Length: 99
Image 1 (tube, helix red, strand yellow):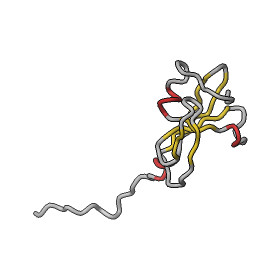
Image 2 (spheres, one colour):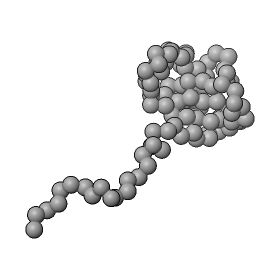
Image 3 (cartoon, rainbow, N blue to C red):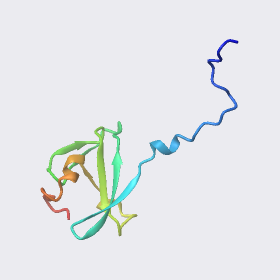
């Protein structure tokens, strides 16, 4: 009997849409709780300034967005960080006026 190579059409497949949604994680830093969202990058063409190193950060690069946990709806408190700068925030605190 020949082997069946085609997948069965009646098999249900998992929902993969959840794999592409950003996931928010709560982390502690400087005595507060912060919401951290990992972004894969996009083609918007925006440029941000990383508070960790004061260098430009293109929105096309993978990075993290961080904001205080107590201000979920206030987008003015959101900051875009290089992932490595956010991971080194204890050794190299943010520069400038953000805290």
